[in-house]
Image (cartoon, rainbow, N blue to C red; front, side):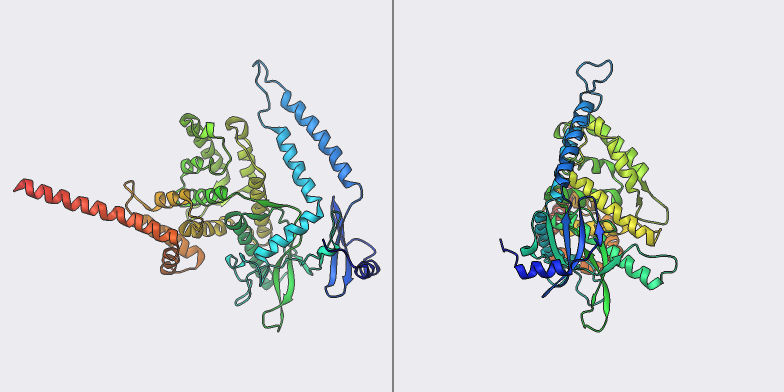
Length: 454
């Protein structure tokens, strides 16, 4: 590990702001200057905060154990509270202790930058350009490892303003620019959830900024999306990513809640004993239908429903005691991240519907299936094929029309992109071969009928 240079430490201390420029429950941030980097942010952990959090954790575990031990009245051996509260407390505290480890946060930031930072991130091309011709990546502060430790984090300073800092007096241009960056933030989160599985799990208004940086030609400044806090970076299993793609596609294209319920095993939300019991699965499907009626709002003039995130988590929480429903941290992080971003977008435009961004992103993933997932293949076939496996041209045309109209990509280009992937060609061959076999069978049957008539 690189040791800090005494000259750097002296320069930072001598230029350190007298008061913190930002503060939170775990730490606070100061501004300083460092040669070769310019202004830097120094994030310092509050003294004694770990002892305070450990004491709180012990108290929460005691209360959770007491609540779990309460028996259900009149039923021997049954617990009143069926949710695993102690496990929930342990998971929450684990995440909180991770957030207090600044060396871990430094590694998180470097990992995130390697995926999404402008000009260098390997996954940045899944994001829209903030302006025509500009690199689609986001701003990530550069970590200075020699000046980082478990208790101190040093990074380049990012100058910007909150995306939600708009008022009635804000110009139309400013509102449109902020909305464009928020949509980019939503698509960046979707890329994290559905593509890379490396997710910034806390994208609230204080962690997402509109940073002002020189344009590509250097003639003026443009607003770019910036992420500035990396205390919580969640890992999402590939199985869950593929399951989410399928769930969104079934929900919006087919409005098939039963198919969504059957995917909850893929999403690791329902244990196998429930998924393998048809009676319980049917009961769960009916309960999920009731939740969907509460959280999805359809209108006659809109092809995509609106989703009420606050009702979603409340509705899913009601399923926990009935079906051993589990809400792993990455699922809560997904919902919280998208719900927060939607709330920020609605502050600018109350008509904004996040599913108009989620659905086309999921459709492209469904059509290309880069992971080669069998469950994604099966979902695509269910959506565009008849019961005998042959292509239903009406369904296939509608799916392509949805993807084209919502993404702005021409249908022929979508088809070309799908057929350029190995999995896309495989699916096309399978569906085509089933159709050929059905036509050959029909020809043979007609020929046989003709011979018998002779």
